[in-house]
Amino acid sequence: MSLSDYENATQTPSEQLQGPSELPVTLSFNETAYASVLATPEALEHWAVGFAFSEGMITRASQVGDITIDRLRHGVRVRMSVATHIERLAGERRRITSASSSCGRCGSAEEAQMMEGLQRLPASTPPPPAQLEKALAQLSDEGKPGLHMALGFDREGQWLGSGVDIGRHNALDKLIGASLIEGRPMAMVLLSSRCSLELVQKAVRAGIPTLATLSHPSPLAVDIARLCALNLICCHRGRRLTLLSSG
Image 1: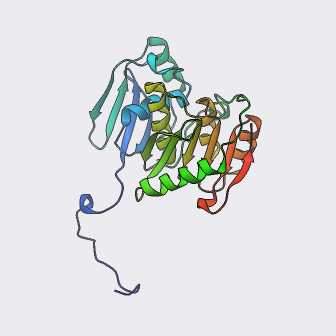
Image 2: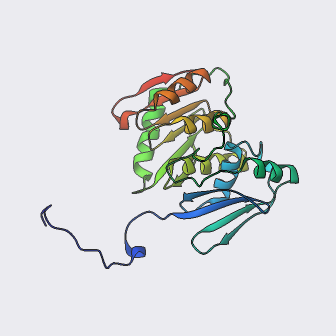
Image 3: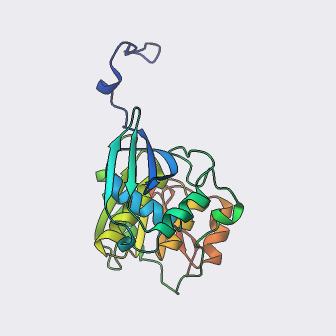
């Protein structure tokens, strides 16, 4: 078949195609709906904890009680059982609009919310290039078509876990949530994407010393990473490594 021909799949049921799964996912604190995102409906408990932490709604996993998942007409609702003061805060700061799978901080009411949780990290040394090379090889081996991955590693470069989602922000939230629940802090995260401000914000808030991404970060992401002493590395899709910010 030449490139001038189409494989006709116009009548093929969508569930039989090879595309990644995504659904509208609404996070509620008790009965208060906080935000809706488009996400891959897997590991949603980890996503909920990581997202709530990244948003500054909780500071530790133990603040969350039961997590229940209910199917809605078109998507799902993830309901977190939390104390009354957290639900009240969620009501005050709920997103104005829904976020897409590619947009982490869309819908924030104020610019200050977009900068929430930023702090200067303790001094740290960037990982040796050999660790990045090993991590990139693992990312290549485990990558899934149409999905982003966030891989977490300890200081010795040992793999701790992965977050997988159609959205890069959701993938990182899933990884952070699992780390909080399991009590395993991460020293480095490798993302299968470019880097924007909100990804730096999530890494800094979680106390992750090093964030590496496949393609070049935005200038704002670099500036904030430098202010926060985050080791920010561009891997140029495995062709070379550039250290853009260091602790």
